[in-house]
Length: 385
Image 1 (tube, one colour):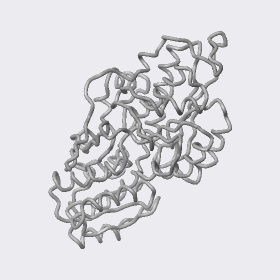
Image 2: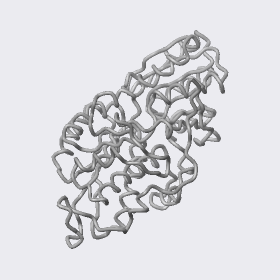
Image 3: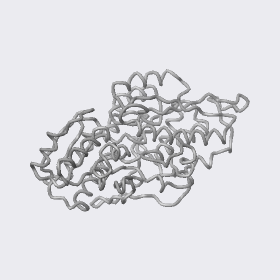
Image 4: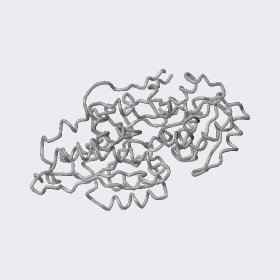
């Protein structure tokens, strides 16, 4: 059956606007806590703020921070604090961070974890403690299959993104020989497996690279030996940038496409603008400039930068948690129940979660972005066939 990934059009900014300023924050007992000023409630950002893939985490942190700052401006008698947990994108660092997070009982929910690898090891800890999880960026489909009671994903997963990337390779590149690379991470391998499965016999070769690898000459030679006319890279920008540089310097003109983990300006600076020109990057995220309401302008004013990958999705995730707190759901259990039942329109899409925490498929969108003139710009929304 033909599936079209729908982008919701129109509407208003998430229902935080409807809640804003309407009532005072309620304590667990339901009494008015306005007299106390700061209610003491917290939500957390969990993701990379340092390391080779930090920019993705910074985008997400800044989206959540904007939501919290706007909420607090309207609710000065009951401010919510954003706690930042820097994982450096490392699964090894994630468990102790999750443990430290659950020990602070005022932390009711998490925007994140940002990456699939850290999510795999942190989410069971958070879920066991009843902490609400809304990831705006971790896309491995397996995360929703573990029975974690508090897991929610505020965007499409790689079971949507992978086939969309494959559709672009077939329908837009018109490729006849595709080479697929992954970095062996939970995210990269999962996404590449989806692409390979969808492309089938179009795949003429594959390879696995390692984290922090810098020499890709052997992989480049493989690509040239099978005369691939398209290369898919499943992984993160830290490895993708030098790989693309070396691919182009070898003389290969194979068209390059990668997933959302590569959708960062570091690809252009790391590979070189000429080498990156024409690269396609898929993402289950909408262009920040197309977000509803005043989000793009507000983000620009707050950070001095245009919104980038997952900034708007993070803003939506944080606002769902804030809406729940505003409505008086100030225990972890109550907030999780609120998110489970939540229905509302954000700046990116309409939110309604399925029992496994996945976003309603009708709200999923996959976009292609293109490197053009040294910048990453929106290309088109991808329809899957």
